[in-house]
Amino acid sequence: MNIKNLHTIRLILIPMTLEITQSLIKGSSVEVEKLGIKCDKKWPTEDTMDILPIINSSLEKTKIPTGFETWMIVDKNNKKIIGDIGFHGEPNKNGEVEVGFGLVEDERGKGFGSESLDAIMAWLKLQESVNIIKAECLIGNKPSARILEKAGLKEVNRDEDLIYWELIN
Image (cartoon, rainbow, N blue to C red; front, side):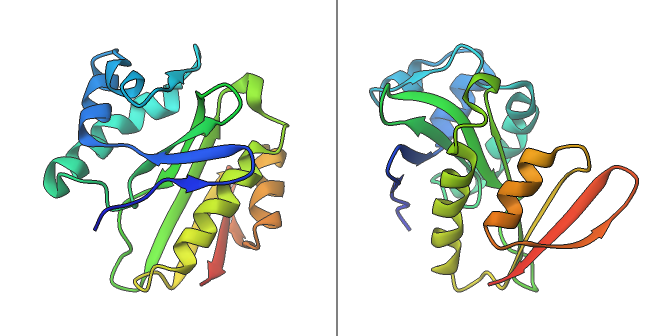
C-alpha cells in the first residue's frame, strides 16, 4: 500500500520512510531535504530521537511506510518540519492503536497540534483494522489534554502521572 501525504489548510503530514529515519538517526537531514523541505532547528526533538530506532526497526520489516509509523508535520508556509505525529505500531488483534504527537516548542499554541491530530484521525477512520484509538498524556500537559479532548477522545483512566484516552472508531 502506497501511503499518500495528508494535507490540511496549513500543514502537510508526510510519512517517514526508512531512508529518512536512517538519515535522521545519523544526524543528517539530507533525505528530508530531497523532498524540498527542511527541518526546524529544534526538530527532531529529543522524544523523536528516542523513537527513531523503533520506527527504523518497523520500516526495516515493511520497507515502505504503512501509515502506522510516524508522520512529519510540515508547515506549508515555510516548508519546515515543525513536529511529528504517529503510532506505537500497527493495530493489535483488538484493533487498538495508540497515537502520539509532538511539536517543537516555538510552534506550540498555534493550533498545529489539533490540525495534525484531526488529519490523522480522519485517516484512521478509513482504516478498517482500527476499532479503538488510544492516547496518553502527562497530567500536567493541559494543552495536549485539550487537543485530545477536542479530537473526540474521552478520558478513561488516570494514574499519578498520566491521563489515558480512548475513542471508539
